[in-house]
Length: 115
Length: 116
Image: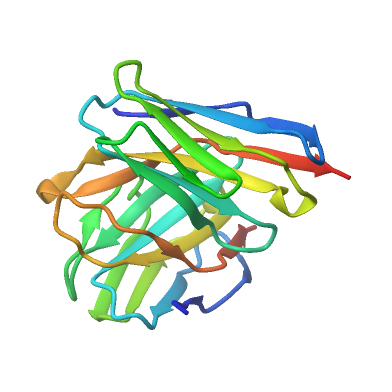
């Protein structure tokens, strides 16, 4: 079946440094790539997403890049802060039963930002 | 704010018991989902529903069933709980933007189930 691989599984950075999380996907028809952040004790929350007709998208300190040829997409967080500490999940769409799209999630990256 | 409420944050059940996990959303979303979250495996889709009384199997439906009698409520049922169903269960909802369009998922805070 289709899958999404996410690296690294854990990432530790100093406050103010940048953090990069990378994902690869297998379904060449994937057209939507969201990133979710899960804080301790909470459900995941969408922080940024990108569609296949765009190569890069930025929202303040976070940005996502997409390389459809290589089937790679990445999350970039600049000027990290302790409140960025969380588990981050990437996801990609794949066609599902009934003609619906579903999301396949990566395994997650636990980011720790140290003051 | 969109709110997805899961009825129980923590449950402890015994092997063979029937377990009900309830989820309610207040944004009139058409789509509702049940995911299972395990370390190193990410979020895996158990079932989803795109309309009242409609349901579709996800990637890991074995041992689970669902019920959607009202638009705002989506229930996950473990007919006979087993120890390998010990996990975090996440409910989510989203607008239906069309079959090929995927909208933002709004998640509940999760229900951590332990089966002894």
